[in-house]
Length: 171
View 1 (cartoon, one colour):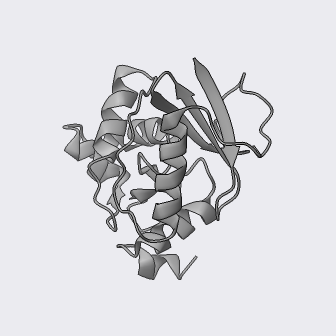
View 2 (cartoon, rainbow, N blue to C red):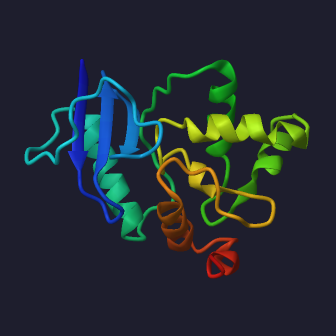
């Protein structure tokens, strides 16, 4: 069974998508790479039927309140083998830290020149925030490549209080 549910957040409405007992999507409504074929996103005034969506909403709420640093949600991420590899590496970036695209490529055993391919996979991450693609920044601290938009990326990095805070003030 597939369920979609839209809920408010401090950064705008978020669409949660679940299949069976796994979260398969968490998207800011209107973001780049928003999946085609989903129902028209409208805020839900009822509780989600899927337990995993309710858990994800609760954990995202705790994250925005500053009470959660890690997530414990069952995920099922659909993508290529390379995308899966990048998304798994993203989950290893600690809360409050930021890696460059080149750092991420090197940690995957790739040359820094693979940073564009890594960035492409990063931008297709289907589960924003929980798979922390916002923690990847340009080599000079530039905030680039966030499907949810640079302002949201800035907000998330500031919320986490990690490296890049100083650079964020410049933008």
